[in-house]
Image 1 (cartoon, rainbow, N blue to C red):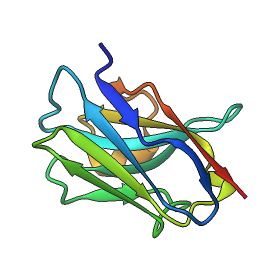
Image 2 (image 1 turned 120 degrees about the horizontal axis):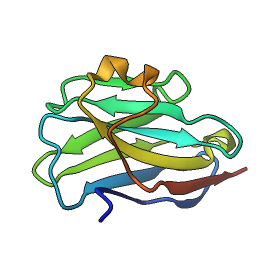
Image 3 (image 1 turned 45 degrees about the vertical axis):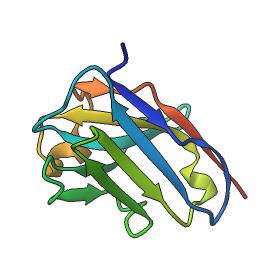
Length: 125
């Protein structure tokens, strides 16, 4: 059973918005930081955003800051990524992740504890 399941990907036009969701399956992530990474074929996985368990702390990559918003609903065991003003360079496979590391460390992490399968977002120009 995949512990994290992403949804909401697909093909969008440049300038449009899209909301990705990630649902925990089979377990809860109480106390965990959760977040999103993305990867383009041939490139390293890139940190996008992270949110603390309380939701009070967030962190974003500079490339998406002011365009993307991360949120979570602990009662539903979900974390979401609202993406706005999408650009073709946002095209990637987006991965949801969970780890006990604090939000501020996520941009430096490579091997997080739990990963989703990933979902493709394609932004056409």
